[in-house]
Length: 443
Image (tube, rainbow, N blue to C red):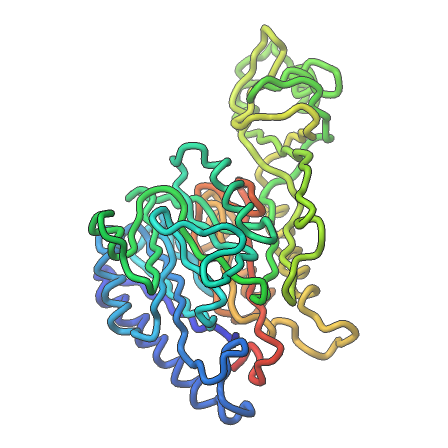
């Protein structure tokens, strides 16, 4: 696995933007091919000698192009015949290296240097198999695109995570004005009897994505976009999404105390609660396989397991508060709020952790970012440059920390990490170049 190649463009007419992307990709592939001899030998592909194609591509479109998604896939497939598998989604916002596209027609394509045996594309009509899949494929983790309106979504994600050795997923809920448009086109071809869109790899519900084998090096982190505005409290009584007691005290009384409010001024209480979120840390009994280090060269690790949810109401009669999710007894609950500086600092932190994870032990001279083959960043659609202070500001922070690594992603209605749904977060995942590749990530 060598460094991926990535291109992006914007134009009112999709054929122009797609042609610009194809031109950029071809130029990068030609430059890589011409540099290969100087790097010390022919290209290899994770032990698959002589394999020089890039069969897997990730593609993200803004919803301005949603109506032409099938035509765009067909065009890209014809112009890039070496790509056999396409995975992606349509969003209100998408991202590339240092660039965010919001409410404008744009697309980004990243070609991933992975041999076919190291990944599997899946969708609702071609689901990911059990841990031991067809042809001996074993999934370690998976990139997931999901429909936010899918019934029993939490359970679906948990079930999918259980089909991977690492019990880890990363990705997001697809959100756009065109609905949940997902792309999952595999080399096996379309399946008969599922309609025209499914036949070309387009789906509007459920889950889709791509799973990766244990020998694909991945490092992933979750960055929070909020800061705590009170101490953590133990949920001592709750029913569904109604929290009745915190630390043995009426939950509403505890919340009002933390916020410095009184029910005597109900208008002020309602206004403040609309700006208040809760961070939930739910105790989880992890599977034994997830507790051990993950197989593969680079284990996948995630950030703090805190789920941010809206505080949606109060129940003065029961002295309770209502949260936009079920809250189990025993969870930790912390009042929090969105905060630009906290979000910026936490994003810088996870980038530093990734650099540290990739740094050779005892080697302070090697740039660890040169080991990054490519990156995927899924961020909340309530974040982005506007939240961070300027156009493309969020992805510019990532670029400043990791350098000009190929990156693609989208802004989601909820972020997926581990087997959970997050909010107001970013999920940054990097692929690590194979150590056996003589040209490294920079090939």
